[in-house]
Image (cartoon, rainbow, N blue to C red; front, top):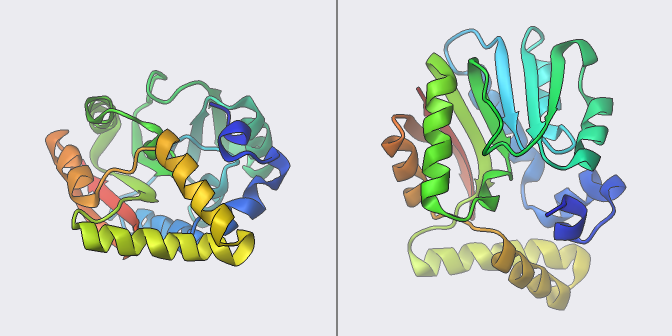
Length: 221
């Protein structure tokens, strides 16, 4: 599904609206970049899964001046926006589904709010195995996404905080409508299950940042 249809917005609004949808959005992207910078090895090639408008890739490019970027996304409209954001000489954009597209040998794989679109754990596990195979030794995967707590009470608290964030812009009724709609279309894997999948794919994951229902995970090959 195209992002504009999924979120029911015009793509030109995306970069502004995503901050009204996702709490701590900018802090999360900054934490992802910091985790990448702390990888402990040179980062020359970064593959960004579901690159969208290039928000995370653009921050990576600004902080890692020598890194080459490969952005993969199946939404042509989003890629057209990413072209304007990313340094042309250091970025290559691929129009395709990152579950099927070839992953080049790289030092890092990044994703921000892309992996929750994967419905089945076995599909995500297969992707993580492909990521592990693409990463050079010591390379890292950094993902920022929604990962609720396993404990029902904590998960409910996280959902309430997300609703409250949405309500500051859209009101409580529309905030609830957004969360219900997204719950039918997105698949938010609990943090503990996500870490287990990464370990099963041969990666060593850690939580670099966590707030409410959201997390930045760093997994080392």
